[in-house]
Length: 375
Length: 222
Ligand SMILES: Nc1ncnc2c1ncn2[C@@H]1O[C@H](COP(=O)(O)OP(=O)(O)O)[C@@H](O)[C@H]1O
Ligand SMILES: [Mg+2]
Image 1 (spheres, rainbow over the protein chains, first blue to last red):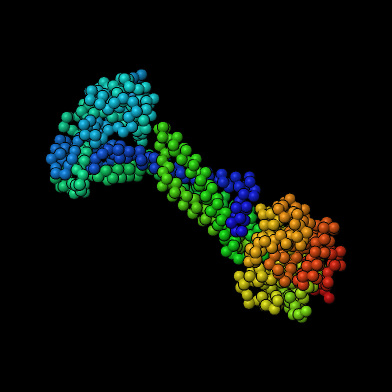
Image 2: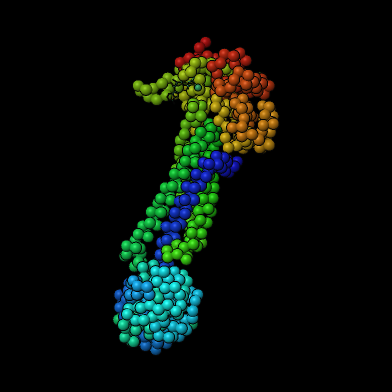
């Protein structure tokens, strides 16, 4: 009957129950959205890195993130190409460049110039056009998300990039930038020209290791023969980039702080409403104690209330958060609520509810049964 | 009939608080009650009736003196042991019923049965005994005061306790319903052989008791 009493105590007064649930659901949504924003931010910082087919990245020594590098040269490219166990190695050009909107006004974009033949890098969500069209000089691919921002509407639009003429030949959907500069994909040679690079200048060399070879050994060899460069695995570069944006920039710090505050505020709200559900029924716990009910029974009722609140609150809260996250996929701010996060959040919600219940149990056990006789 | 009393209090004194603010709620109270006997505890408000009831029920430790329940001395028992003793030997009836508002009449009685380790199907019989079988699925807020108090008595009878302690069970009821409740308690004492202590300050109620004990300022008046 402890479970029955827990359930009835919660649901008997429907409006009270709704208030409690709104509290827990709000806390879950708040925490999920804040963590989802953080997750979305960190995902966005590494999304282009993650979508390449390379095992290893070669770059200038001391590079701290994907976006800001000094060029390296053909020497690194050919060193990699000539190495045993290297299947493919190609240069990648990445540059912030000014963008002149067709209707007037300036924006900044992040240009990514990739090798069209190797398939090691490039846009992955093309919805309009054909990547083959990038072989024509001056052609570029942009994302639908940023069409308005960049003042374009689709294929065929002409713009000016860093004083070079450019033409849109393809549109992607959902390749989101976490900076204010949208990604613009183009062929490596076009990017070199638009960025005023030498034909031998690259920002990265992407290396694909032959199947059956150990990427770690190839990485060690490359490090040995290229002491002037850094050689990272995809995971290392992603972690480097993510940590750079999260920990050393204001943007990352504010997202991180919001996430932490979200958790704190959520915990406080849940503690409040859960504590209140016990206090609401204090007289009844006093009655139970006067009757001689064992403490274990009272614990079970209060913990039962906590588990029920956590389960229902999480179910509704995470559904709302997942719907919001899905809606964010076409917006400029990405919120990621993964199943793993949902599962962790359930444990967190449960822990919050149980912790709040444990605090209120002390209150219920300290109540003087005399109160039952004297009201 | 066994001569051993169901409840025995000897030289019981109770002082709330300490020093200047101390209240002498009970002063050397002696009281003994046999099985099958209904005792009415009379006295003005603040005279110590509730305090005495709580001491007899093991809810409060007396400052001085001894209490025995069915021959078991309460003094050496721990809180947990007292709770177990209440559960196995006592039923409580409160002035404000103290039913669980979220449970039906039947479930209120079932809860007590479960706590006392009895099968839940006894609840129907207990509610029938207090004349409430037809109302068993009603929630407390749907029941009248008299009905609520009868549910409370059925709940107190769960687990077949040998002692029933009732604190002003009729105070919130009108005369008619109050008398019906007292009638019920008397039947429970006489026919079922339980010891019943009923606190009241209603003289009409006391006429139906086997014995009346008056208390004033924490002392029993002879
Ligand atoms: N918890 C308490 N702390 C201090 N004084 C109390 C407490 N409970 C009761 N009293 C005092 O003890 C006396 C007896 O109270 P009580 O047993 O409730 O009397 P009754 O039930 O006859 O009205 C009163 O003076 C009351 O104010
Ligand atoms: Mg009283």
